Structures are given as C-alpha cells and as structure tokens.
Length: 235
Image (tube, rainbow, N blue to C red; front, side, top):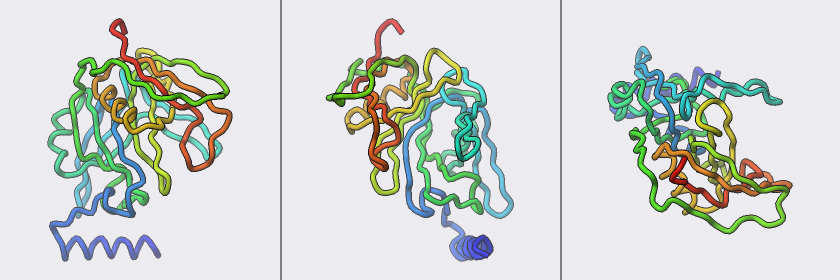
C-alpha cells in the first residue's frame, strides 16, 4: 500500500513538475555525504518513465568484488553501487574504466521509483596523483586506549554521517591493492579535510590510530580513532 501511494506521488510530481529532479539527496533528508576513490567499472542510463544513471565503483586500487558476513546477513563492501545526478552522467560515461573520486550524498530513505540506490553522486574528480601539502597532519590522541598502532594503505572513503550525531568516518585499503579494508573514525574537522585531500591524491599513507576499549553508541562508528595521517616520500 505504501509503495502504491509513493508511486502515485512520484508520477504526480513527474507530470505536474516535469523539470523537478526527485533525487536521493532530496528525499527523506541526508544521512551521510562524502567521497570514495576507485576504478569506475560500470555506468549505464536506465528506466522507463524516469531515467537514472547507475554505476559501480571498485574501491581503491586493483580490488575485486568483496562481501562480509554479519549478524544481519551478507554486507557488500565492494563494488560500491551508486546512482548519479543528471549533471554528471556524461562525465561518468566518459570516465568509465578510469580511477576517479566521487562525491556523493546518501538519503535516509531510498527512493527506488526514481533510482536504484540511496546514494547520489553529484561531483566527479580525477585522481590527482600529487603529494598532498603538508605531508603530515595530526591531532591530540585518545589516552588510555586498548592499543595503538599504524596501518599503511590508501584512503578510499571519507564520510560525514549520522541521523542525529554526525561523525567523521574513514576507510583504508590496506597494503598496495586488494580487499583488506579497515574502518576508522576521525574526531577532528581539520583531519577530515586533510583525509579528503589525501584520498583525492590516491597516494599511500600511514594512518596512526588508538583503539579504545569501548565507544558510546551513536557517537562514532568504530573504536579506532585516527590521530595522525602521514604521506611518506618513499611509499
């Protein structure tokens, strides 16, 4: 019943306001936004009444399809499926096969009558392959953690997400390639902006972290706090 009502609403808006863009970024409010880096392996235009751009991004460098099993079932990590704003469809079509950086907005509710996913890509960038300036950014680290260490790889995702309390989250592709992905949390806006810069460079980095014993629900996604990101000259 709810789907029938939603479908009638979409059709009504489509015919009454033919120029309206009913995209995920404006449907149900924004849950997250961020950037992902990887190889654009598929892009297509599909739909009968309302056309939508749909694509797939293999995260990082030389990765392959990858899923994990959780208590809720199977979660697909790679490739990332997304929908596209009409303004970037031509660019995405031209860049199929290239390594790109995609900026996206994720809706709280997936409007499947308009597009296949709750992610809408609205900006497309090429990977700069240039060393970010400065080469290092650090903040105060948590004290009294369970452990601390460093992981090496490429930052493939940086996001600002949450329904009530927004948090900064990072995903690292460990090593030089492959499907070893690690989720971590950023607690500083300046670090978040630097992580975006590093992601857009495609360069390998050292990510220093502190692992907490626990985190309060709703405050962040992981118990790994990133306190320093370094881009060495020899990686």
